[in-house]
Image (cartoon, rainbow, N blue to C red; front, side, top):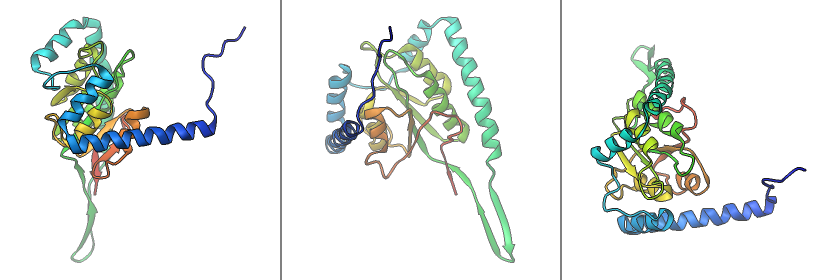
Length: 235
């Protein structure tokens, strides 16, 4: 006998839910903009039941996370990242600058200039998306972004070892144990010690996806679901 695991929601109900989510996210972003660090700490306690004075992980914390992984796990991460890095490098080499003198004294062209700072959001929870670390941090590095920070939510009250390892091995300059919309807003607005980045990348998902595309007109957003999304301005 067939068992329904999930049923579709009526179109009208979906629209109402989307409007409610958008309103909720807009209110949260406004609160973070206005109250800064205080609001971020409150949201972390509310959504993740997680509190600490500094969400940035120390090198000692990063090392402990890596040490908890088996050799096979670390080798798997290295293998996956090598594939992403290799393809990203091939893609970057195909993106060429152009300068041509079309008439005497008339020079036209374009340059591919990396943004100054990129923020990479890596979803966590029961099913951590390590690929988000590979495909966001590594591609930013290959693109030549000078500063690359990353954030991922805690799992069971502490940093998730595999995600932390993936972020570090991919080359993130700073790693934060902070999740959800509060992490994305912190990267965009520059709260809780994070630098204000020029671009936020990461997998879209409900509240987080709304946070990445709502009210960040001064920031660029890209979904890092595929390695071809290099964090470069094309000029």
